[in-house]
Image (cartoon, rainbow, N blue to C red; front, side):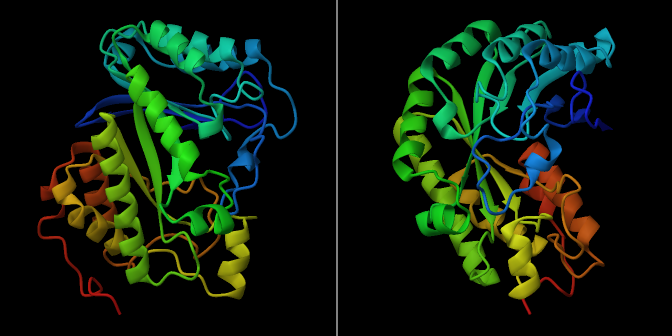
Length: 321
């Protein structure tokens, strides 16, 4: 992974990784900060340029910077490209359409490219822009990644302050289905201080089932991205962590959620990154002895969707206290 600071012609970070599911190239672009900026659990805007404008030419320079770090043989192996910023990729006030079109035109030249995934809030996703993106990708698929977080509207909007109604989410699903665009929905595990570990498991399962049913009804290709919640510095959750004793979810809970959702055949990816923003003691974990073993199993499952990744996985801490 490569990190950057305030150079407008370099990304926040990028990485290239070979996985059993194929080679992925990730762009985290350095742009103006998230315009919405109200999510109570998030401190990603700290990785942005804040209120400073980062122009289209500079963002194109970031694209060239990343692609220039890899040789033709490496780029020829790339099958998936994921694009992030510290806000919404499709918010034209932070990332001009010309810059994202340029990025897709560059990566569309990768001979094995199958999928490009763009992260955005739902309100910035527009039909005309999706059509322009698809046109530039040719035969490769387009995926929109959105933070749905939870099917519980109270938690999503009163606690997390996402500002995302079920109606708006369903409108996004209909738009993507109509244009043949895939959808990835982020789902948080234990996003509310009031949830017990058991409650958190059940709440995440309800959300996964809802997402899968929406995909079935709409003929929409849906992937869930399961994110165990961590306590980010400077977030409202940090205050609850300090004052109310919030405990991040156990890694075993993430394993249980995935195993109990097995019958749905819903593709589930697992997010185990904290972007270096977690406070001390504010990260999802187990007892400490089995943490890396369970993390490795979750990473393997995320890449392969093979439940054998969990075979034989155990520890004395596995049963809830």
